[in-house]
Amino acid sequence: CWETNGTANPRLLDEMAQLSLRSGGCIKFDLKAWDESLHLALTGFSNQRTLGNFARLAQLIPQRPDPPLLVASTLLVPGYVDADEVGAIASFIASLDPSLPYSLLGFHPQFHMHDLPTTSRAHAARCEQAAREAGLSRVRIGNVHVLGPSYD
Image 1 (cartoon, helix red, strand yellow):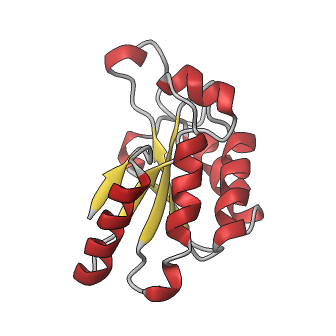
Image 2 (image 1 turned 30 degrees about the vertical axis):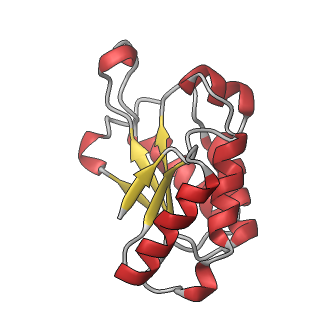
């Protein structure tokens, strides 16, 4: 199993995919943001290669739909990654395959973003609803233990 920000060279990504297909593993993409300006603000890099690589791997899903070859997650950073942003990411994923698993992860302040609050339960619920409304059938809120109270 691999976890990636998705910016790998496409040839290396193809090798990762072949290893995962043979071994029963998966490739998890951290889709940080749909809006390129927001992605640049959060990561310092464009999301164009990440989205292109994700779409590239989605073409391999018919080779082994179960267990899923490709899965996605998004960190719900308060004040940055909201339900609209998650809805846009989820629409992109659903356009490739609406059965792709998508995990929404609660943010816990640390390192450079220690001044932000934790993701609230209400924020996570709104994002989960937006992902489902975008057409995804396998959405879950991960690491619920870090979610803060529903203050917003």
